[in-house]
Length: 125
Ligand SMILES: [Zn+2]
Ligand SMILES: [Zn+2]
Image 1 (cartoon, rainbow, N blue to C red):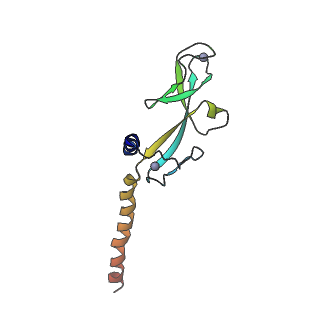
Image 2 (image 1 turned 90 degrees about the vertical axis):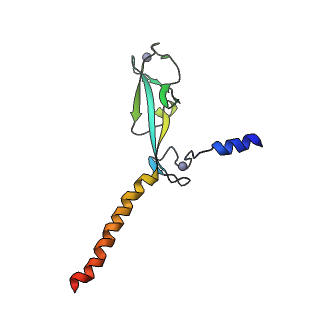
Image 3 (image 1 turned 180 degrees about the vertical axis):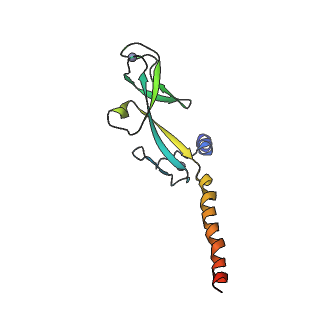
């Protein structure tokens, strides 16, 4: 009982409804704007694709050494679109933007219209 309580307390939105096949969208659970970004690592020496993982927010290869040439240097590549071959190597990173940041911009738009409207009857008189 105690463990589940603790788990719920620490729980935050994982934006599960923004599925990996979507490019981006607003999470229906928390209202955040979520962008799906795919990353892959390659061996810096021979260019072979490496299985990728996210460790402490960093995109790194799962193995320390390249299975093709034994090198331990790698490059991180952002994928524009995910395909069936790359999905085995790539890792998905969700970029979250708080929707609250967008609110003042939309409000300003409506305020301007409201200022103009009362002036119209005065001009016609
Ligand atoms: Zn969410
Ligand atoms: Zn290599």
